[in-house]
Image 1 (tube, rainbow, N blue to C red):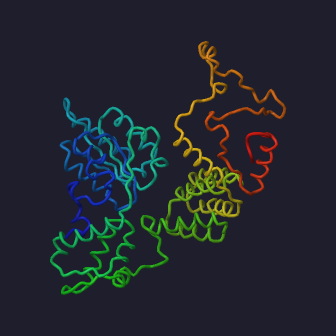
Image 2: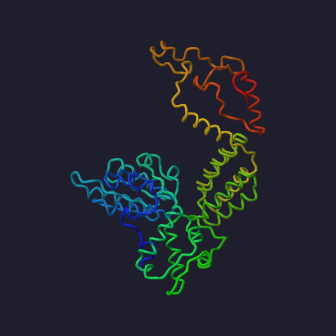
Image 3: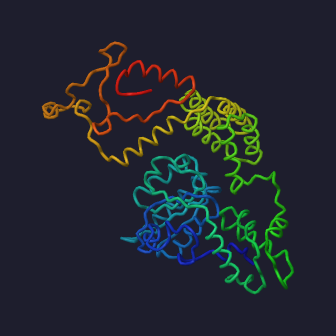
Length: 423
């Protein structure tokens, strides 16, 4: 018999649990599917949240050819073969076939390039599924032709709804006397993953006598024989350990940083994923206190792309220790946040006339660029003038923090801006 997760895989949108922001009544993907007006898109989210299931629902509903590839096993030849089949299946004004590619992030550049022309000319509609950020894993030309929809981990109410549905609807479970006394461990080990929840439920149910099955926190934990040293790069611990890694570097603890790094390496984590997270931390948490951190993190990312494991562990460790031991500042992060908030509140304020470009005679006559003072014509390559819109001309969005690098910068600006700005 099929596993519980396969037996309960929904075949219609009405049976789909979770992702209400995308497939609930009136939501964008539901409208697209119900009208049949499908355009290319990529589903991005963690494992077990319904990406493949939604693709299968679309396959069942759409009256058009539907092809499937797994990027884990398919090559360029497979892509070309399916493109040729798609071309042959199109007659007159028939709707475009649909190609679903699971784990599309596993396709290399040449494989993704081979999809471009077919997506662009409508040979097929592409639906991709990925657990990795498409911004990093999907080539820009292909990404620009696809809408990205973000799938979320199932929340507590989703998992409870799925549990209840399984007990009442599954051909096997509904015949058995199952009582759930406690569900905290069940939900915690599932980690927002529907497939994992159903696998655990089936495991626990099958491990008990048929007369009465009691599911509680102790039973679930014992049945799973959870190993605290385990690392599931597709599961909840993946997110816990990367969180501990980031917080250790932010907290200036190099020993903890390399420990969590080792946990990820031993668990088979993707080196590029680790390097990307360090790039973000270098900009967000080290920032202007040590601008070289971003350069080193970027060099690390380039290096691990070139050499891979096992050697990649060395630049990863070097960068993790460097970031952990660097002085910290989030002033740039805070400044852009404050600036975005101000833009949202004030709208499109006009650019002051003296800062505008005047490429035409009319613009020149309208005083575009008039009275602009070229900084290099003045002592110290600076002249005090207004650069913000009139309504917010005195706003100060960047606040230097108390580290040597930013204090030197603040002192320099203080000497330049004798009026109007306080650093």
